[in-house]
Length: 392
Ligand SMILES: Cc1ncc(COP(=O)(O)O)c(C=O)c1O
Image (cartoon, rainbow, N blue to C red):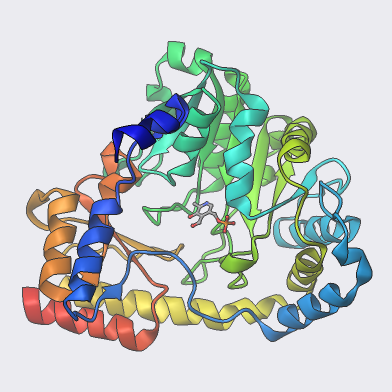
């Protein structure tokens, strides 16, 4: 980066640091320029189409003249009611659509704005490491201090809340958690979520649970909501996404639910930053949430079959790939303890397959790589074949 551009960037932005995947992107581009057929297992972006009835609802919504004007900041009444009804049906939790539900421009938008809503400069936010990078960068943008909480394999990637130093807990206003977890594929049971709620109450902080993968589960597993923990509404806000559930990453729609004050604070930021979600997209979101939910099943069966093929291919060359019961990712330790950057560069150079170095998700992600299941079946099979040929 040139000195001039660096000077134009705020200190806040500079603190976030360089894009860790930039080097991998460059290598990938160089291979493509040489004519290599690169297969990308790096991104978690469903390759399957959005269901037809949702697309039709968007068309209808686009023809409604109300859609051509500013939408309500907090989401349409129709969308917030549909969300509350879905939540009741899915988790058995009753929400007030007027006070405890907020439409988001994707869950990322809510995560990015929450620290602005709730953190004072210098206050700490506990962020999982490895973790979705937005928790950290959003905290820095709000001039808060991200404090990494390690997610370790021997604890099944659940944080050791008792190990958080009391002075850190005292300074913390927010704690981010995410189960089913990106990038580790780990899941949390109600017992752990109850522990997290108790921790938040004890330390008077807001628990932010990112549940973007709640519906992307396999082998009969059903992921819980933190709001199922009795008393969670006192301290918790949970973010959900329609992106992965209904193959709608490009549509930008999600929602926040939970503690009314937290939901209200996040909504206040939004009134100052954006003007809500395009009404036609919200109308399509209503179709998604109120329509038949078993449309998700074929996609899950597809991901599960890909997971099995990828895991068995990786194991066939002696790599220790676990088989996750949720999310779109395999989180695998690198062979022989190699650094994640070295190993992913080696795989890219020798096979043309892009995998993500775990260190991109935090220091504790080093020694792991992430492989995603959102590549079409034939390309995934080709990636497995190349890995087996090269490393077998
Ligand atoms: C853990 C996690 N949370 C949130 C998001 C953001 O999803 P969206 O903004 O599309 O709802 C993602 C996307 O990959 C994610 O992995």
